[in-house]
Image (cartoon, rainbow, N blue to C red; front, side):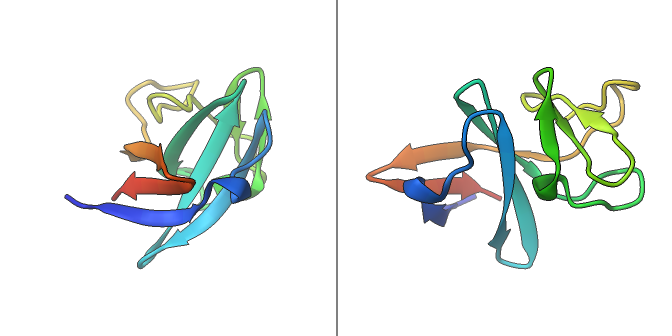
Length: 101
């Protein structure tokens, strides 16, 4: 798989927040948890809420619709480790944010 340029590094979310970015035919949620970035699928497994419009609470990405929480490193929900959103390798290079989707 190839790396796709998602955005300039300057557009990344602030510490302990999330932001959504269009990426081809999908949307990717970038989470910044304590200064560590991760890229995960933007669609909550519960009812399809936009994770990139949610929040970061206690180190977890929280869906804005019903509060489902996800581990930003594994994509697993906090209530069932077998339920996971897709995670995408993320790389910051020459001021660009690249993801492998």
